[in-house]
Image 1 (spheres, rainbow, N blue to C red):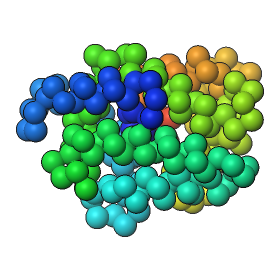
Image 2 (image 1 turned 90 degrees about the horizontal axis):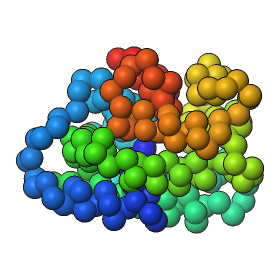
Image 3 (image 1 turned 180 degrees about the vertical axis):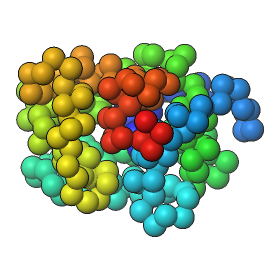
Image 4 (image 1 turned 90 degrees about the vertical axis):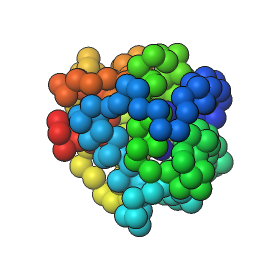
Length: 203
């Protein structure tokens, strides 16, 4: 998702281990209303049929939408990243075939204490968005990611300007990792990273 917190590769085991230490129904560190709004924005975009649950097919569909608007050859890599997120969430879900918003928030609750796992996820996501491998995210690359997530044309110019902290016209790896931390592990409505996936309803 990203949105969800752990793609294939470095960081996945750390997040999975962390969630395994908390049993079902453990409500420690519940997300704030603001954090819930951020995650709900991403969750809603992925829940294509609006039934309140994510399934593996939703993650496959997102990877397919994203690959379809990019250069040929990206489908396998994007599918692997999305599948890694699905596995992490499914393992924590009360129903391993169906992930609810509360299941996602259970994983998000852990991330403030797991900066290395968050950063590893950010690195993988940055590499996925950076289509040409120049170690920069361009406005067009960012827009394609958001449009894949939303499944519809989206004007991202204003949000991209927030993320481009130094005003050089691109988002660097360092900027993106900072924004990713702000989104998944932060609770500050004024942080630029709040808008990584669009503007949450509570921001």
